[in-house]
Length: 468
Image (cartoon, rainbow, N blue to C red):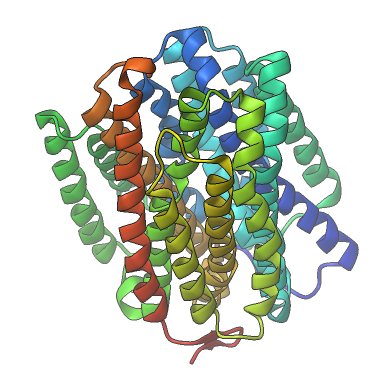
């Protein structure tokens, strides 16, 4: 178990730690947005359908989502720095493996492995930085780390589009693998080790296994609806989650203390808000990337210049909203952010074959402003509502909601394309069907955001000293 030391870390080490966590937060969205722009070229190289291309993204999200909570608990027990370091080294290796893919199966398989080590990073980097900095600076460091996420998303369309056009999609994996190795060297040489006391509690292997299997069945089944086998898998996944809850209520040292959801209303509603927010926004970039390239005929670099509007606005707003959440009630900031996101999504439901690029950029900018206003305050609410000793589990739970939301978002997009396109590749003859599927996806996302506004408002006020 990690010793509860927070204010004894030298300022220089704190600065290096901030650089490390911001850098690791930068990598995941940079990869995700870059790969979205490269999907058309990957589809051509490997002759993949639209639904097949969605699994290049979903395989990564699936393996990441099912392991975030177990890795967060392991970080609480054995050290968040150690888990972060192993995660980044493994991420570098599996990213290089992705660059060596020779067919669709190998690429999707390597992306699955990449997601495993991503889960190690994501479940521990936010917990590590929050547990080290004093409470009065929590909103600031959360805002900076969330901004790093959006800077990664902002630079990816430009750099990823350029790399794809100039050097091919494999070059994206080369660059990210190299950057990951640099971050791991910085951790080893500049970030001090944590003080770890003797671990007395046992790790919950049974609960972790049931959780991973249940989430896998639920996610995979949902993405394949409405075929009968997918309905069965989805149902089994839901039942598996109920079994997981039953196990966690009985075990002495649960991987996730589910009682916190009933005992801590703020924690529960903030996590559900994050789930809804990412469910209603993540696949938008995936759909628009395909729309801009297949419908409007833009190349990856040109499409990237359009898509940059959303993450650029996120990056500008997230740092400001993080600092503001140290002073103002973060639930109102989160609710306002969700409402603004809903407006941007609603605008994009009117997309058609002749939609102007200006209209799309405005819609994306509004969505980005809302997303940036929501994310940092909501994270601050979650982490301020729990005891420091479970920061890793709390951070991992929030990250699981985020990844699960992303996965559901992609599953909604995949299901819509499957219903309208089947297993066809996108071509001139089925462009109208693809546009209709895109509209349905954006309508669903708008409805989800509307629900999220009320969930964000339902939370009580949270300060750095706890829940009021």
